[in-house]
Length: 475
Image 1: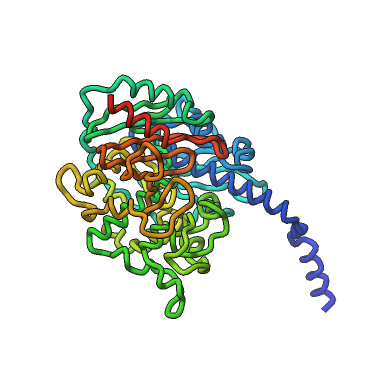
Image 2: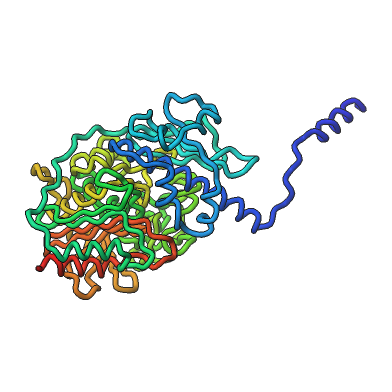
């Protein structure tokens, strides 16, 4: 008995010592480091891997200069100091070997594909991991996860390259002046534009790119993905899989009022559900590695569905979840191939659920083709109808509660009828850091602006730019 007691005492002596109780500030600081590491891992992985998928290249230095500067506080102050390594297929999983890759010879388009990106953030925790699925982008593993970890792989779809965008015969001289204003930061004193494109009557009138970018270089869409999500819902409606009046699959069964929420209400940000941060922040999912299912589905109801507008990533994610049963036969990549958008990648969480509120990577040309698809009433250049007739009118109709201010909201798309000098039928996809796709049916016009504008800055004045493009085209 005495021997047993001594062994027990020894086992306690050598047991791991629990970490002392932490203040909330200490926990928040640690959590912010974990989020910053996840943010860095995912952006390095996605920017480099998706560019190489398109036959072009991005260097880590370029990603640090554009995507990983000017991000939201306090992550901005943390990201640059976190060490990382990029591991490529066929490369030994040795830290030193992984660290020897250089921008001069390790990130050209001829190297083997990116397998994962690791970012260190705490001495007592595994590095944050972003893992690349060939052709299907990158997904972020949960905080604390280490390889191997079973994940659901999303299969890519082989797609033929579409015909190049037709080019207009003449370009109005004033349009060049407008482009100079864009890159001269006259539409936002700290705006950082990476690309602009103007297409009218199906013809490419103008495109201009910053260094490190071009027609084949993808960027993250941020919330432009919500308009892409609404487009995928339209494709499911066209195939006869769902109706926008169908329940969105929320709630826990009979008697739960959330079960009455429709796909239409989810697309229109009108589910009436609570969300814990103002605006669109979904940090645990976007940077923390949680899944769509655990973060977006079960928020409580505060308002009668259809009576209150609140911008929420979770609503879009649930609209996408409502059509997910059809993805086995018709994944987003298959739709992108039909729509002439082969350089677009919809990424997922580590469980294989699409993060279509934000995590899509696409090129300026692919966005232009999406806008043209809406101008052509959902019919592709080869005559295939892939969206329901009148879907453009549906997504751009403010048939529900509306936000305050000049912008209106339809079904996954913003409405620009509140702006002076812009036609009332104009609607737009908008995303963080200055992503814009403007569609103006009455002018048969598509405008794309991509950027990496700093968080909390002046932003980019898309309404002023749109007015100036309209005026230039009237020359």
